[in-house]
Image 1 (tube, one colour):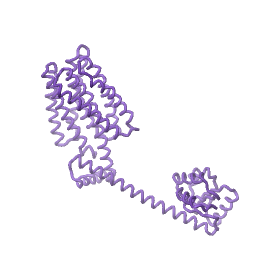
Image 2 (cartoon, one colour):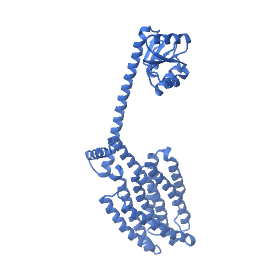
Image 3 (cartoon, helix red, strand yellow):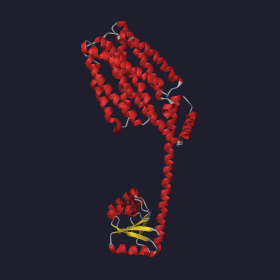
Image 4 (cartoon, helix red, strand yellow):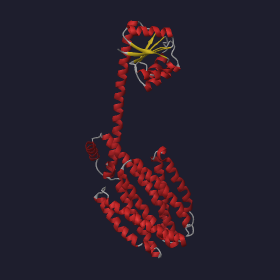
Length: 424
């Protein structure tokens, strides 16, 4: 039997309505107070709701709207109110039959059947609309993923779509799901790369300041200093616009605060004495950028992105090494000793990470060639680390550190755009 729940403020009218419904074979689960209609509808789970209200008011429409969003079902309203505006409100609130000036018992079943038919029709339309919306959203995801693959691998649109379909069949997932993975991987890979650049730039800026203090290639160092400052701010701008504030805002705000502390010191005359406090400020920025990069990698839940983090970190280590070699020669006493000790530790870190990258399975012929070039550049760079006591040695060290940085910049970009990384 069809089951209904009755809502009626007047006891006599409610009893009559229940009797009429029962008389035509409708199972009445009970009569409830309209203040508890949502709770009682969820509890009793009727096939329909029959509401008798002589003059519908705002609380009634609010209750019906809440019911439609919480536990939608066919709703029939018996009322004495023929106001057209209220009929429109009723339709918007989820009413399927609005019956004015009473009913005849023989019409009750057809009215309920009409309400059920309208409800089913609405559900079918809603399902169809959701399906169309889902397909449209999936189409947008596919188009975005194709664009990413086309830029990453320089393939045609047709080839990019063929790759998505191949991955879809391989992983037994919809093309839209594979496309979302590609988009997420690309978004996090770029964010990790940019946050990693902030780590590198914190050390490069101190290195350049040390070169200026030592009067080594002052014109070139000043140009690189200005470019580095612009690069920090460009990366912060992109990250602030692309990262969700609710998830990463606190970490990014901290990095921006640390940058605001460091930046004024970079505009002051380059001298040896302020190098140690400048390095301390840069170290705090490095730690903030490291936290952001680590959290981004963890949040991505993509193990393949670890290689972007490690490769990007090599850029920072190349600049830290050059900085430490310079500080060990320019500073005195305990500060010089600390820089020399840090230099030895950073060399170990660089060589360990380089060996890890060389053994990593995520590689292409292009990446292998760049790794070989980086290894050769590293051997040349590391042999020159001890020449920072000579003016020409400092110049050579500065140039070698920039060469090594450029190679790992290119490598990090290759990993960021790697098909294996984007589709694993």
